[in-house]
Image 1 (cartoon, helix red, strand yellow):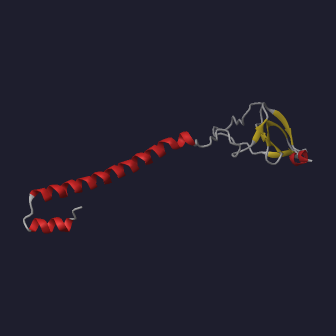
Image 2 (cartoon, rainbow, N blue to C red; image 1 turned 90 degrees about the vertical axis):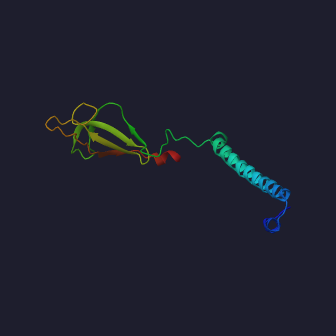
Image 3 (cartoon, rainbow, N blue to C red; image 1 turned 45 degrees about the horizontal axis):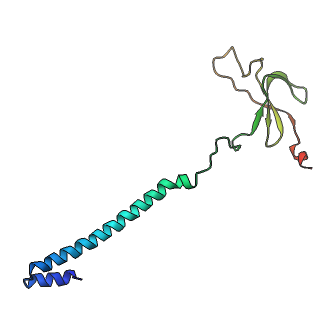
Length: 139
C-alpha cells in the first residue's frame, strides 16, 4: 500500500514512473470503492422511499367522523320552541355527540334561509328544541 507521503518522497528523489502508476491505481481503486459505497447507500435509500407506501400504506380518512357529527333531517319541518315562544318552518339537526336537537329556521318551506327583501345571504341561527339521552342507551 503506497501512502501519499511515501509517494511524494519517492517523487522528490526521482522515482520511476511505475511508482506513479501504482499510486494512481491504488488511489483510483479507493475512490472507486468509495463511490460504489455512496451509490449503494443512495440506491438503498431511494428504494426504501419508493417502497414505503407499498409496504405500509397510510390510513385513509375519507369519512372520518371527527369534523361535525350532525344528522340533518331531510326536508323542512315545523319547528316549535319548548317554551312556546316560536313556531317557524326550518331544518331539524341532531348533534350526535351530545344528543341535542337544534332547529335552524328557514322561515319558508325552502330548504335554506331566504330573505327576499335583502340581497345579502341570510344566516339561520339555531335554537334548542330538545335533547336525546344517548347516554341512557348504555344501561
